[in-house]
Figure 1 (tube, helix red, strand yellow):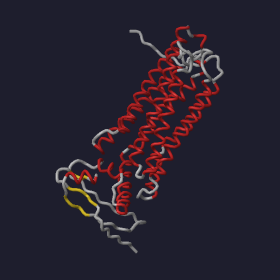
Figure 2 (cartoon, helix red, strand yellow):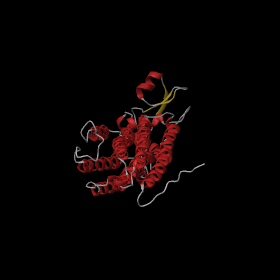
Figure 3 (cartoon, helix red, strand yellow):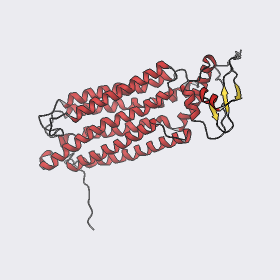
Figure 4 (cartoon, one colour):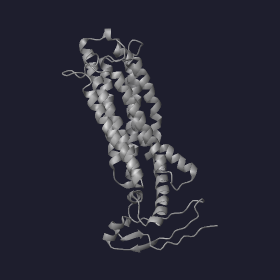
Length: 357
């Protein structure tokens, strides 16, 4: 039997891209699986953010396949060592990878934004998250259409020809908007959860875990530096090595960091803090918030009980009445605890407040 050995040298660095790509893909798939499994154990169903992240992961796998095709066509080698057919295949694979790169980043952002939308417990906060969602979708649509037609038809994938627009300027603009959107995703939890009823240290840990997209900013900057260095290159297959490596790390880490907020300790802290905050708000407004209704979906199967205690800094106590009611009233109040015994938690109109000394 003959064995095929892959050699890595200064004249052929492409196999390094394959090694990094498939290692990161394995980690990304595992992170996505853990995220969906954690959500399933808490909510007993998959929600829209899970589908966004899973779709982003699948697109990232497609990106990995396109990059592997680039390596096979000569990425990391000098253009003089490639045939005309190899150069054509290289450009087609690079063209496909650029489209998939933009789509995967968009889906990853939608995954975390959709989750933040479920935590937005005020109309203004909901509007802020929705504005980020709209900006992300619109910008990605513009970017993908631009990439698709970056070179003149009938060969829009002919990236080495003189029939293309200024690709360096476009990717600079893409990177700038990407940094802005990632920072918006990173800072949004601070705005949404500033009144979270948790100890300061634990509250900070939750906010940091939700702000992990800020970790992508240095990678984006490094990618742009490499991209501008090779923009005037006459030997793209060889010089594109660093750009493709940075892009590969970026697209995979984008999915991985999106999954971090869904680890069980963070979700448990969010449930505890938001439940306490929303019961405190409901005491004043008599209306359950969207986040409280979301948390009800996260309660375990069968009988559920809700008990809230105030942190040391908040010694106030509020009283609620547990009573029975028809199924229609449960749906109206949005606070169903168990369909088997028809119990609901209903805030009474008279609230006793005791201030501890």
